[in-house]
Image (cartoon, rainbow, N blue to C red):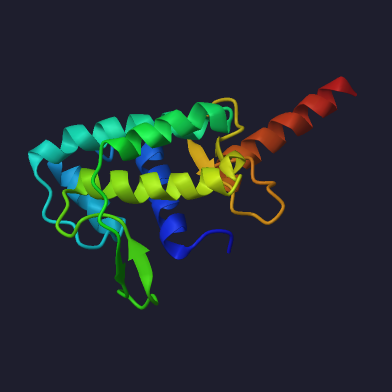
Length: 181
C-alpha cells in the first residue's frame, strides 16, 4: 500500500466522481443520483443530502478534474491549497467499519460537499507532499476523458480500464503494425 486506507478511499471517490460525468450518465444529474453516489461511496458521517449539495458537488468535480490533469506540482498546489482554504477542518481520531484508529478531517455532521472537500483535499495534499502527483493522470486512450489513480508498484498503469480502453489501444497498435508490414 502506498497511501493510507482513507487516502486511497478519497482518491477512489474523486475518480468515481470525475469519471461519472465522462461515462455518459451523470452521478450528479439529480438528488437521487447524488444519494446513490454517496451510498455507493461508503462515506461515513454524512447527513442526508439535499438539493443545495448538488451545486457544490458539481463544482468539486470540476476542481478534482483540474487537479488530476495538472501537469506538475506547481500547477496542482494552488488548486489543492485553494480547495483547503475554503473548508473548515476538525481533525479527530476514529475507528469505524473495521479499520483501526485513523484521522478524519471533516467536522462531524458536515454536508457531503464539505466532507469531500476536506477529505479529498487532505488526500491530495498527502499525494503532492509525497511526490506522487504523477500517479493521478488522465487515461492514455485517445478517445477517453476518464482519469485514474495508478497505485501499481512500478507506475505502469496507463488506462482507466485495461479491458476497454487498454484493449482498444492495444488492438489499434497491433493493426497499425500489421498495416506497416
